[in-house]
Length: 606
Image (cartoon, rainbow, N blue to C red; front, side):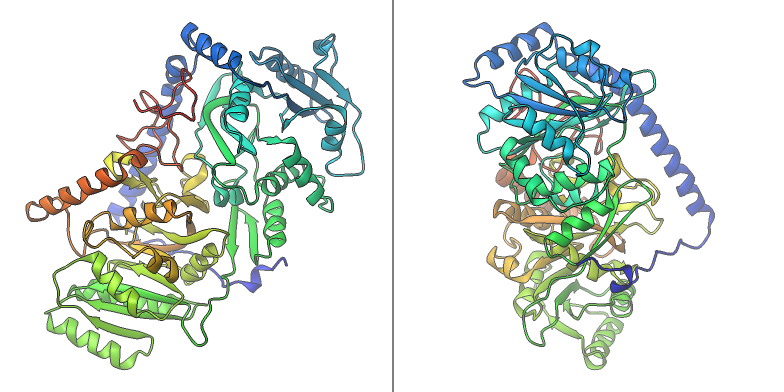
């Protein structure tokens, strides 16, 4: 049920701040910092490859011993479409396969590819292209070669010599796995490696935004056949669209135990991985989700979903909970923006007044409660406990969803709540976070990385509005391990089932991170959408946790997080173990928290 953009609320693009010298300085300085970080990565990555991604004799010996110890040796089939490729790219890929330490593979070259390099190698089969069907190449390959796992490899791509050995080891040692993928980097015009794509574990929301599991998605043969049968009526001549659509169909419904990520750079690709809005639109239509998908300028897909119906006759769809104490200018800006700029969603606004004493604030709250039918003011005279305040308000909320919102936020685009509810309609998603900005249009929040700087940190802090971030993720719908409660949408039934925030151990700090980790442990997913945008004057309301009078409480809550979630904090599934946990997000790990000396799926604390 493909919808036109007219069926959705029109997103108001954020207006740039008024011109001033300090804002100009921020824009110019921020871009210079981002260029410096990109240059540092270009310089550091070759040294990182030499140190951690060039197998030594000890590594080769360990890999050979593990390969020899496998009880079975699954055959891995590979499809290479050579119709539009030149001789040299095909020969490059064939040579990298013939250099594999794992010998049990079959290559099907579809089209008139060069035969010289494959002469005498019985593992390589040349097949005539089957015209007239979008997935004709796959049909030819499956009919021509017998293999238990299959993947498509691009002409010009090089596989690391140990790539298929790690895929085979994973296939054997992880019997639940139905699909496998790995990290990759890109080859420049001189054949030098750069631009590493260090990915997270299974992230079905991110796959709607970009085909991140390519360029080498390895599927069980039966899983592939089932997906091809389900896509029998899908028609397009565009190969990136076919690849993205097949990846979406073949991985639909898989859990983390079935969709496994090998955190090693095993493919060096000659071309970019391309997302397809057409493929994503078709996939969401097949799931019965009402959506509008279009390509974004940065190479990904913008995904806007219509919210699912919220049960309850006459009840608001969302209860927005805003704890506050005095600070009238902050509160007024937050409340006015919610009431004036929230379109397309029926909501109630619960303001939890935690002991305000300022006469102007009390007068404002009385006027709101009297004049605005969407507003209720709840009184709580107890000591400040952010977790308890939200829990008490949630118990009185009438909406099917709760939107926890700080009083130091300001809505930017009218579709913000509509977009968050739409993301919450995705399968398995129980909570959704928003994109939060500082006033100078530097990114404040795009999801949290647990374990970063100890407990948790923002994934793309202070990026500019035109910066895509690593792998474009600062602009893409995706799954996260945790998001901030400064703006957090959660299904009320789920919130109550988990007992809400832990008000005993995390009264002020880390209650959102703890709650999100409990959500994940209960089997729910958390999404982050860039299409819900707000300003957030971080800590303007309650101040810093590091001042002397709050430091003891903050330290107590930090230690409680480490005690409860210590092992989890060392391995955020949405973050790559080759990346650092200190000194900022998405920086190379020196050393990484994974090594070729041991199987990647074993605990590898360093």
